[in-house]
Every structure is written in structure tokens, then in C-alpha cells.
Image 1 (tube, protein in one colour):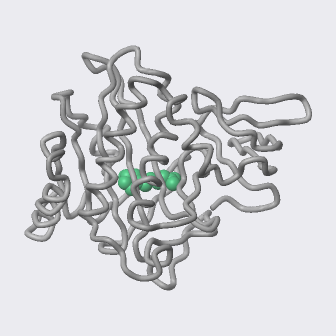
Image 2 (tube, rainbow, N blue to C red):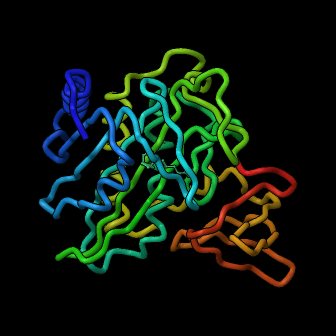
Length: 273
Ligand code: BTN
């Protein structure tokens, strides 16, 4: 992992955008690493009361959910991970995935993006197309409790001929905003500030305090969906989420609770964005 003049400037600009909140964060911005999530999972900073953030221009092995790859392009993407420490007794970590998606959506709405929707557990969509991918991983064995590594990849400007394996319906912020894309430091600072606000709400009130905001943006509310695991599939109507952030699926045999894990949600008859 190496920093250059360019990444040092990006780091300084992020700190400037964070303003009074800057002391709450430790920001690193590197030219290249394997994966910002992998780096922070392998070497999770101890809880010193601040949120450690690693952004990278390039990831040689960016990771998505369910063992997928995550592709990104220098200048065309914002890719970063951050470490959030939670004291013992914090509400079920399942809800954190949804909190991360909600924080990104709310931050992007402040930049004027309209029509943002959340696809359980945490994809951020615009017009049914995926704009942001989020990978939340838990790191245990910390003195005071649990650490969550929240990795976020935002498509800013996709190359014109891009093809993303196993995904259809991918979009970028340039299209969502019809042109001008905010700078990456401005975006990063806004998302970190929103994550900090929502993680504090989550730590004190759990997911119920954020459930309504999530439900308002639920891309598949009352729509037929299929939940796909590695060897199983379950169909039903998306009946929202419960107080732990589990998806509620109304099926012929009753309402089933699906926890975020190795499953993906697809609109019935469609492919996963
Ligand atoms: C998904 O949609 O499958 C999740 C994609 C998560 C991508 C981000 S980019 C920053 C961080 N580092 C990674 O290797 N993955 C996450």
C-alpha cells in the first residue's frame, strides 16, 4: 500500500470537507491495495475512539458479496472501507448492513440524487440499476466488543464498454446526476458523516430507530421476489424488514424471516442488479 502526492491531496481534501468532525476519523488514501476490506480485516485498528478509514485508487482483488469480484476504475469509482467499533450489548449486527446502505443513500440524496432505492440487504439502486455495492464484515476478539468493517464501492463514471460479470443493470453517479459528479473527497466526507450519525443511532436505539427510513426506500416493497442461496431458492412477496433487519418474505406457508448472509434477492423473473 503506498501513498502518492495525488492520494495525499485526496486525503487532505477529505479532512477539509469533514471540518469539525475530522478529529473523529483517521483517513488513509493509498494508490493501490489488494482490497480495502481485506486490509482492514487482516489488520483491524484497535478501538482508539476514532473511525479508521482506508480509501484506494486501485484494488487488485476488490471483493463483493457472496465471493464475487468488485471492479473499480481510478477516477471512475470511489472505493473505501471504514472500521466501526461497537460496545458489547449493541443490537444484533445483522441490521448494520442495512444501516450502511441507508447512510450512503441519505448522503447521496444531499448531493441531489433522486429516486435512490435500497435493495435488501444493502445495494443502493437508481432506476432499478446498481449504483453502490456494500460489503460488511465483522471482526471479533476486540477488548470492548465488536468491530464492523464497512466497505463501500460507488460507481462514479463507468467506462463506456463496461461489462460486469454476473450483474445486469449497473449505473453510475454521472448518469444519476446527469453530468456533474461531486469530488471524491466531498463524497467520502459526506458518507462518513452520515455513517457516523446513523451508527450512533443504531448503537443506542438499534435498527427499529432507522427501520422506517429504510422501508421508505425499499426497492421491492410488496413485489414478488426470489431469495437465492447457493443451493436453495425461496419465492414470495417482499413484506419489508423486521426490527433486526431481517427480510420478511410472505410465502404460501407463512412469513419467513431471512437474515442477511449468503443469499441474494432478485425480482421474480429478473436478474440480480
Ligand atoms: C457487492 O455489491 O457485492 C459489495 C461490493 C463492495 C465493494 C467494496 S469496494 C471497497 C471495499 N473493498 C472491497 O474489496 N470491497 C468493498
